[in-house]
Length: 620
Figure: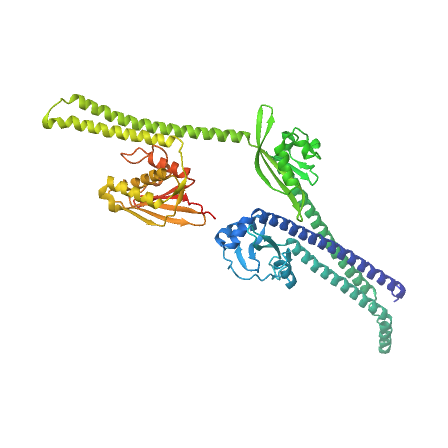
C-alpha cells in the first residue's frame, strides 16, 4: 500500500506544523509577558501610591512619630500604627531607629528594641537606607505555598526634634502573586511547545524510516511465506494531527482566560472610577480639584451650585476667577498650590443673597512621586451650624443664669424667713428684767448671725460674678497653706490635729489673696465633710509641664458619682447648712490663674481635689 503523502509532502507538512506551533507558542508567551508587565506596573504604581500616603502621614505627624520613638512609648504608638496599617491595607507598620532597631510596631505582641532583619534587602540597600536616607523597596519574601506574597517599603523620615527614623510598611502584593503565576504559566507552555516540537520530530523520523521498516518487514514475511501487510501510516498521521489540535485548543483556552482577566480588571477600574464620581457628586461640601496651573479639572454638583457655574463652565476655570474678590480664599488655595502647605478648616465668609455666609475652607496639595501636581479644595457651608452653636451657647448661659438666680433667691428667702420668724418671736416676747431678759437678747444674737450669713453669701456671690482683679506675683504656697491652717485652727481648735501638710511646693505665679481664699475654702470643705475626718495637702512638681499639683484629700463621706459633675455649679450643694458658692468660686480663681482643678471621689471613701498651678518661670 502506498502512503497517502509523499516524503516531500510529509516533510513540508511537518515543517508547517512546527512553524505554526512555534508562532502560536510565541504569541501566547508574548501575551503572558505583556500581562506580567501590566501587573508589575500595577505593583510599582501601588508601591508609589503607598510611598506617597505614608510620606504624607509622616510629614503630618512629625511630632508624634518623633516623640513616640524617642521616648519609646509603644503603648501610645501602637494604636496609631495599627490604625495606619488598617487604613492603608498593610500587613504591619513599624518604626525603626537610625541603626535599624525596632522601637514601635502595630502588632501588640511584637518584641521591641530588636534589630530588624531587612528581609529581601541587599547590604548596599541597607547602607543606602540607614546611612544615606534613601527610600528602599525590599524584594518579595520567600514564603511557602498558600502564603501571600509580601513586599516591604522602608521610608526614612526626620522627626520634629531632628532625630532620624525609618517607617517600615509591609503590604500584600497581589500584583506580584499574579505576575509569579503568569511566569509559571509561561514556563509551562514553553515546555509544552518544546515537547510538541520534540514529539513532531520523533513522529517525522519514524515516518521517514517507515519505508525501510516496511521493506524489512516484507522481507521477513516473504521468507516466512506470508503476505500479511502491516498497518498503514494513516493511523500514525491521525494521532499526530489529533495531538497537534489538542495543544492548539489548550493554548486558545488560556488565551481566552487571559483576555477575560484583563477585561474584568478594566471593568473593575471603570466601576471604581464611576462610584468615586457618584460619591463626589452626592457630597454636600463643594470639592474642587485643581491642576498644577490652578485650573479646575474636576468639580462636584455642590461646587457648581455654590459658585453659580454649570459643570461645563466650571471646568478649566482658573481659581483666581472662581474666588475673585475673596482674599482669604485665594490665600488658602495659593498656600496649598504654590507653597505645598496644608490649610485645614479655615473659617472664611462670603457675601450672598440674604446675608453673609460662613464657610470652612480646607486646601491641601496633591502629591505624586514627591512633587506637587495640583491641589484639592473642600468648602463646607457652616453658617447654620455656627448659628445653632451660638443659640445653644446662649441657651446654656441663660439656663446657668436661671439656676444661679434661683439658688440665690432660695437662700435669701430662707434667711429672710428666719429673720421674720425671729422678729415675730421678739415682738411677742414681753420686755423683762433679770434672768428673763436673756430671751430677747438670744433672739437678737440669732438675727445678727443670720444677717452675717446672708451678708457673707451675697458677698461671695458678688465675688463670683464680678471679674477678678488678679495681680500675678511669685507666691509661696507653703506659707499660704500654713496661714490657712492657723486660721482654721482658731475657728476649730478641736480639729487642729486633723490637718496635715506634706510634699514639695515651689513658688507659683498667682495672687496671694485669691489663692488663700481658694485654699481656705477647700480645707474648710474637707473639715465639714465629717466630725472625725482627716484633711491633708500634699504637693508634687511636674518639671516637664512646669506645674505644681496640690492634692486636697479628706477621709470624709465622699461624693455620690451622680453629683461629681455638679460640685462646681453655683448654688448646688448637698450640705444642710451650705449654699454652694464656695467650690464655684474656687474653680473660678484657679482658672483665672491659668490652672485647672479636678475632683476624684468615692462614696464612703473620701474626696481629693487636684489643683494644678503654673510654676514661676526661671530667668536665664
